[in-house]
Structures are given as C-alpha cells and as structure tokens.
Image (cartoon, rainbow, N blue to C red; front, side, top):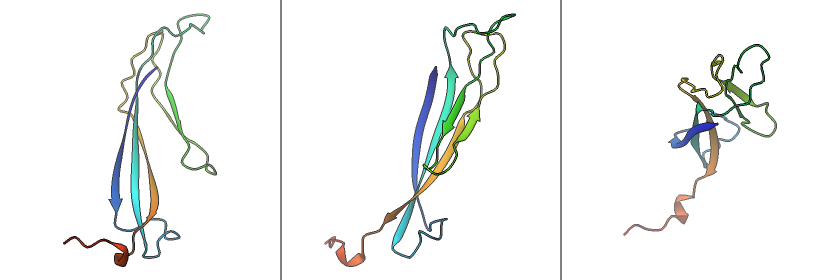
Length: 108
C-alpha cells in the first residue's frame, strides 16, 4: 500500500488544555496528514467477483485514548486500487516548558 504523509508544527498562544497552562508553558501543535494513494497486487478474497478494497488509518492520540479511525471509500472489484480521497489529518497539542526570561542569554 502506498501512503503519503507529512507533519506540520506551529506554536499556539495558549494551551487548549487548561490543566497544562500555568503561565510557564508554551504549547506546540503538531498536525499529521495521511493520504492513502494506492495498493498493488492485492489477493482476491471474494468468491463471486474481485476484492473490494479500502484503506484504513488508525491514529492513537495517547496511550489511554481509543484510536481515531479514518477510512477511504471502497474501490469496487479492483486488485490494484487507486484511492481518490483527499486524506485525513489529526492534531496533537504538546506542552513545552518555556525557558524563564532570566535564563535567556543576552542577544547583544
């Protein structure tokens, strides 16, 4: 199966999870994009016609949360499918301890 993916990172002004935010934390947001492109030479598992494949992506946000599941549309009767879906994205917010201003080097 051919899959394309990339990750974007951005800084947020304030953590969405207020349990993390105490004024000394900065939050960074990571977003992953995944797109199923194609599969080749799949085995035929149907008795009457050809296999009807789809692509399933599971993303587990944290160890204690259930996975998020994304699926493409089914490609009917095809052992070499090309998936036309736009893809899926999921974001994570990660708290990072910001350095205290007194520990910053002078930029002179």
